[in-house]
Length: 116
Image (cartoon, rainbow, N blue to C red; front, top):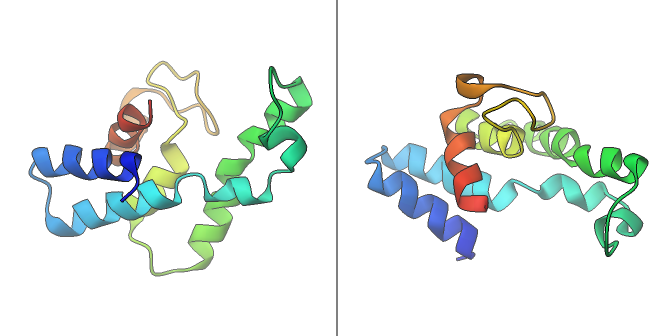
């Protein structure tokens, strides 16, 4: 099991979430950056700072990931929430939707803590 997946799983287990919720977060942890498969290597693997345009391309991995994951209509909503919200920030400075505070799903917030 990947470290980030293991940490996210342990976190929600410690919070006594239901097994179905734990599994949903685990799947989200595995899938959170799946949209990066559609990002050109020039931006994805670039050493150093990205240009404004490259940063926009990188940020698009959330929408691309949601498109891929949502196309398979069997994922629980909580799994989708992790993919959708893992770059949002409590202060609204994240992406892709600029959510603030409790607008961000709890699963997304917990996974983000594990991701950093």
